[in-house]
Length: 354
Image (cartoon, rainbow, N blue to C red; front, top):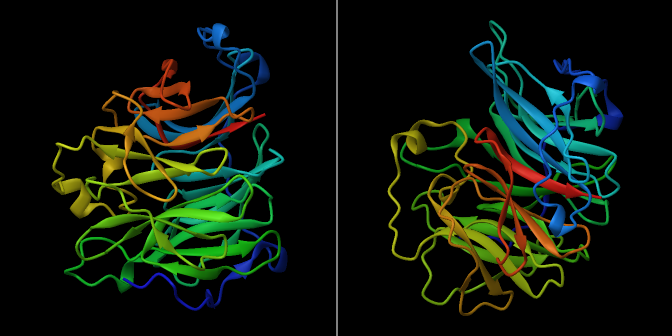
């Protein structure tokens, strides 16, 4: 596995600032007076800020993906973006100044069209209209994960081309690219890699390296430009690792993984789905932590849930996590675990903003 590759620009990509942009309709019809509100059962935790997340709700019998925002102070839920069935939101990231977001999105397919998974940008406000961030090189290119660096200077994105995948290769060959924001070009910085997250000081990158043939994965840390990649060796731990995130001080990595005693077997959905983002994401898992230099792994939770993905509070005291049941919150060591939002439709990722 080669992860220290020379950087190369993604060919033929057209950046938002250079070309006319395609608009995506926003089907959100919620008015401010009709916004739903959930009971605040977490007042004793003194949480502040908002959680931005994607969810799938039933709309006339069809599955309609949405991006919503939960105000932790009032319990009010605002819908930022809504789509119809036959569309999907895979991932989203919010700018450090909390004014806009970028989502990995597959728009509703039209007769005779080939809708791909691309990155779209939109203001972080109700009923905003998304614009495509850049045009993918070919209809077979998929952009499935995207991260904003905390300093706001770069977008990190995970990309693969499903037409280039050999028939006997069970997993896509993911690549991580970095693009200066705004007006830059995507530049590949790592091969065979996905799940990028950037440290609070924007100097380091943690990610998961994936062998597309065997499915074996390892936890890596590198410089922010992808240089000097180093494996984080986990003592006696299986290689099923997802959704890593730096601790606020950058000294440790939190990640999702199944119980040590569990064995993973690919199911029919893993084999048939077009976008196989992760393995442990659909296997009952928990939160674990390890020093950034590697070593003994510490188990933080005993929840055995799917879809785990974390975002740390702006005051660095709590961690919000997706789960198969909705959204949880806990302290950084896994203690004082609490359910914030019971919603099995919540999926993909979430972001905690001021």
